[in-house]
Image 1 (cartoon, rainbow, N blue to C red):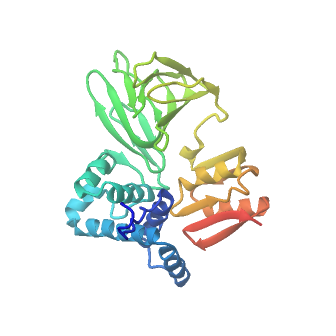
Image 2: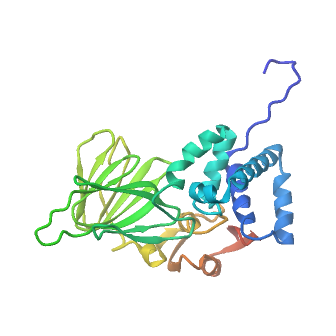
Image 3: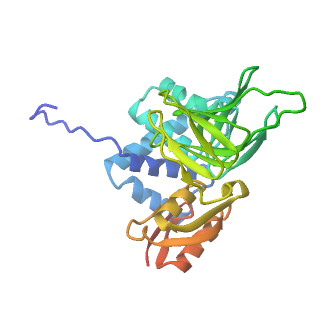
Length: 325
């Protein structure tokens, strides 16, 4: 803007502010705010013009959803309630991209997926060939079986797969997991695949047998064997490392920490919890070991507070920070 025009251009809300707006949006879909929550929300909304703009965007999003007829809305949104990840993606699209058609186009792959889970939810699916797919929190997949390939398209999130076995005299086509960064071909196996959206990286853990990984750029195939893990992008494949756990504990509803930093533990736990869960950098270095139930994260947080020199700062049941004691 040229000098002397007297016009002030307001900065758009930061990602952090948009994340907080998404949290408030998901909280308000459950039950009316308590008096303390309402006070906290009012304080947050008036912190800056960017906070106010973020909330106006959140209201626009809810207006869009409410305007969609119930039967169509069930098909588009999948659930009446938006989870935290979907809310954040939708809010960011509205703020930075604007047109509603673009918003729905970007969201359609996950919203229309064959199978999907919301935050804190897991699901087990048995496929036509007997293969079993476990979906972790906030995950979505599409399935496409043909005469030449059994394909699971991981749209977002994490899955654990147990491939089905061919019967006597039967030959099954290759079993492949397609990700944004490349393909994983199963070699008769039990393995997990997690797609990290924030850094366009995929992690593969092998619990039985092995897989063959081919990045999207066409790099040479990499074999990964039982007890190994690696990450890859479309352009590179990391060196394989030894797995520290014999299986994926989240399938049994557990989060296992083996001398993990508190910051990493809270980041992982926040994947399964609706609302804001943050760790103050001043205490993130503390280390902790234990087995925590993913369905009882409040209990896990109480255990952490009683074990380490930290305390829980509860702004509301949906907004908790771990800070110095």
